[in-house]
Amino acid sequence: MHLTTYTDYSVRVLLYAALKGDSLSNIGEIARAYGISRNHLMKVVHGLARHGYITTMRGKGGGLRLARPPKDIRMGAVVRDTESEIAPAPCAPKRDGQNCPIESACRWRTALDGAMKSFLEKLDEVTLADLSEPRSDLTRLLGLDMPPVDPAAPAVADGPAA
Image (cartoon, rainbow, N blue to C red):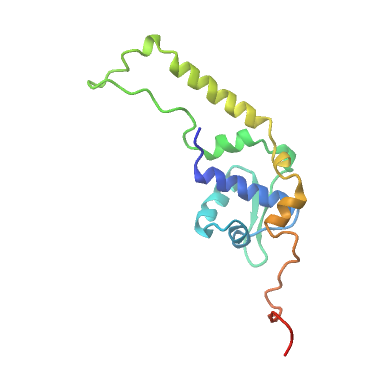
């Protein structure tokens, strides 16, 4: 199973928002934390809001947060909602446009469909809350354990004072 970058970024946004709890996050800080493009995240955030995973607030001081508790967000549902095509590749047609010549006796398609079903069922067992623990390691790696930077505060010089 190959998941798209869109799904990967969607999980990252949800994980970041879960770690922030009730505090708002913004696309810029999420992009910096993961080292990914703001432009990509804008599309991802829009899709997550459309599917009801996050709520967004516009304007100065706006941002995003989870629309429901992390324990209520199942990762199988996230994959279903973010992947445009999660079925295995279609069977190859014959040259004259007819169906595959072995279609009526083929068990490969049945095996692939069963594997896909099992994959998604396994992801349905995992919640966003499961992915966001242990918090301390994740918050440290994403820089969320640092106090927020006040953009109006004067810059502090590194090193000893002269």
